[in-house]
Image (cartoon, rainbow, N blue to C red; front, top):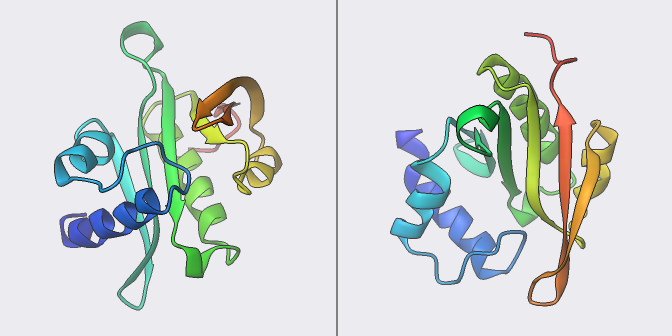
Length: 153
């Protein structure tokens, strides 16, 4: 992870700057990046090939205390690598990793309604459990949840 830190920060900064899937303000500072992506996470994964970062994911508890058994995860895939299987690989990996880390469910709190990954989430067993109207700049956000009980350790 340490080797990928600068690339991960730069890539996530491009995602935020383009307004693609995360609500952070641009320009992204390292402090904001660290607070969101690094400090509170249980695991960070990077998808790369040929020394080129293609996407990344994180897993962290969605809640504290008695509800800390529910994970939260976030993903991004850089534009040139979308629709190549990178996103699916990241999500499938995070399901196994979250289960291995002791979580029994995983939840996405803020998936923009326009996000094309929503179809992938449904195919991988996620249920839409809520919708937040006008969540970010007039766009609705969808909340997804999935049990991890069927994921083999």
